[in-house]
Length: 303
Image (cartoon, rainbow, N blue to C red; front, side, top):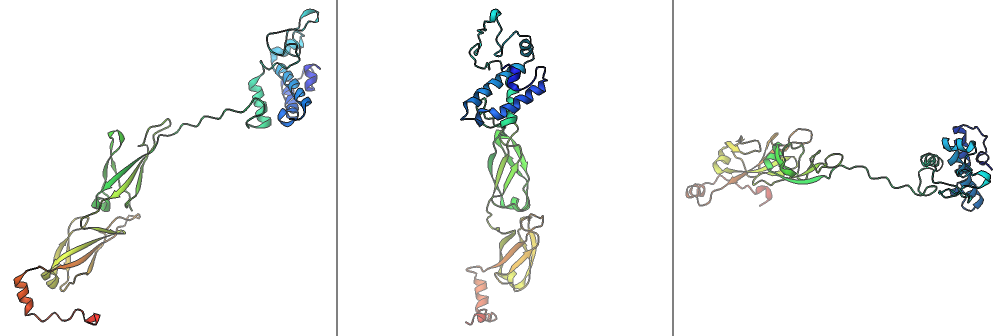
């Protein structure tokens, strides 16, 4: 059978007709679908060899003029078959060395997908896409008052880069702040810096949710007589009005003197009054020795 007969087409067929005929036959005869059919494998090799030659314009023209045979070897005078250097000359095997590799690849991707194995062997795995640089972690110790008032912090990053860091609303111990593009450099951009906030304890302020608690000492006369006393807050000192007869444990609320919440509002400062009775004060001891106006503050406890 000549090459046209192998593909079931007429001489003079167009390139599209040749390709269509080959695709149809290859789909039926491919070795992956005919593992137990040696004849189908032989037919597949024959149509592949035919397509290889007829899809090459120059080789097809030489074949049509009778210059080369079905294996692509030059025809010798007096009927001698060529013994060309390429494999397959005169031994009945298809010659794949000059196969239209790109064209065949397109055909088999369309027929059998991009799976491994099959004609041409497994595909090489694609290289991983370029990645950004790695993230870098930092731990930032923030003073208690700075955290409560959201004061900007100076942060030194790798490479001695120093930046101003704005603390977010709702900041608390363990809050993570991502700084885009401040990590290690990579092929498609730098990674990020991840700053973990650690709020330092304070010597007299205590955090209670979004509120701040403070124990405020009072002298005995301030508690008895009342008046204005100075009290610290994270925003600075304020004057607090103590009513006469104040007792230890009384809590006074200063609005908006706590931590900033996520919604931008602030908690309060909760000031607990603590009366400080002086020790070894002879004058106070003498006065109280003859004073009988204290009553029984434990009467409510049944004692």
